[in-house]
Amino acid sequence: MLPGMTLAGIVLAAGSSTRMGRPKQLLPVRGRPLLEHVVAVACASRLDSVLVVLGADAELIRGRVSWRRAVPIVNPDYRAGMSTSLRAGIAALGPEVEGAVVILGDQLGVSARLLDRLIAAREGSGLQIAALRLNGLLQPPVLLVRELWGEVSALRGDVGLRDLIRCRPELVAAVRPDAGAGDPDDVDTPEDWRHRSGAG
Image (cartoon, rainbow, N blue to C red; front, side, top):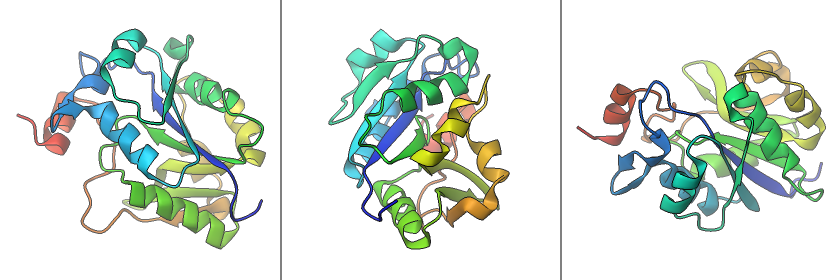
């Protein structure tokens, strides 16, 4: 695992937004769809490539978001939970990719600087994982080296990476949120959207 490893971003945006009541990927935030903000951040970072995993309302979302250098793919099994989108994203990466940064498609407070700090933290520590530490807990965005992708592929159901990284803290280089940045937690409800986007 060399410091300059080839890294891909996997933006998870396949959910059906049941708590929101409409596709949250397309919620307007400062004149652009929510997901477009996250994609722009990933594309502005040091990541060598960016995949966006779509599922519910995929064709609608595909036509309304500016993808920059990101490549949208569709997870046909998205109804079976987040683990299926993780597997779909990892399966779509080429053999040259040595690490993946998993980003939630509704994390408005994540910046390109934060993603670059995750990459730098992994490089500097030599550990296999780098993750955000928020309010004392490890959570996405998460950088995982290829050697751990088998554990991700073994996940089933509506399960993401939080449990995996919290059970293995000795493998994690933790990064705190950017000073003065917005809350990088995800957007699940209309109240979350209004609070984090300044809407309403």
